[in-house]
Image (cartoon, rainbow, N blue to C red; front, side, top):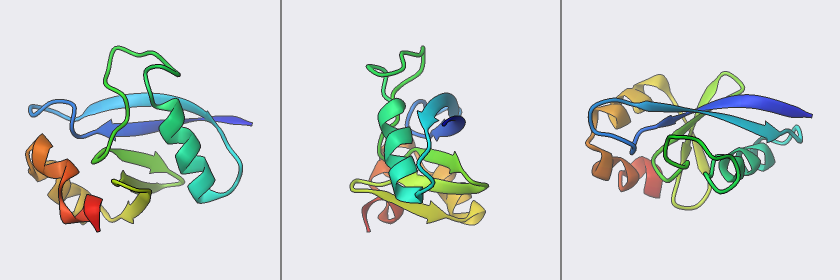
Length: 100
């Protein structure tokens, strides 16, 4: 089965958060689904006029927010998302939330 997800591209521009629509197959396993969403969020898989999904971006999945980390994903709260959004784009990818 294929589902549609949204990703908030926090590193795309300093002025605003860019949204990306991603169609990806679902497996029922959270981390497998997130990996598939990440892969399908690349422009060489689903070309779109917005940047590919990258470290520091946030995937909306099952009513939660999942941060794309250097390795893997991390579920974050709305407060943590607000903190990330307050940083400049370069700081977002290197924040403790994305690294640790």
